Image (cartoon, rainbow, N blue to C red):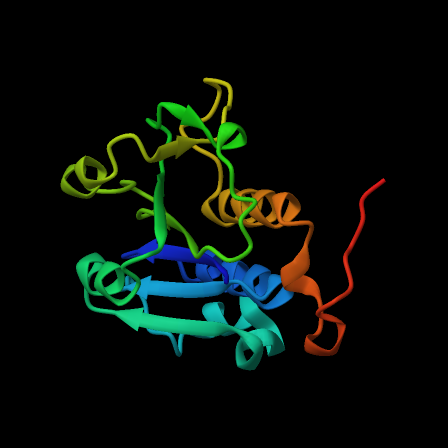
Length: 169
């Protein structure tokens, strides 16, 4: 199946563009929950995503409920600085499962009512107290690549190479 990055009401076009580039480079899906703090025609968004936009699988949703309804068997995880569980202890190795990583607004994170829905499924990337949070696009890349690493990077294989396996040393 797939790795999915979900941006809940993102505000900064450059972050979304950078995340789109990560999605293009990993075959991850990008889900944008409206309202957005910018137009998807925004030049900063296009600039950050460069010429990769046609390669990004972008899905627009009016609400998180709409997205979750469309993927009833998906495993959804909120990613937040207040998460109780490190992302490193979760098992994302089932390549037949859809994994959704839900990120909040850059300035406010996820609303409490959304976090309440993810009790026990709120993950954190450990960090020092020197910063309020890590950059959204960096955080998304960490989660996408951790899930892919656990799946032996099978999502990077071209369709003709489905039987091939990528090995790490």
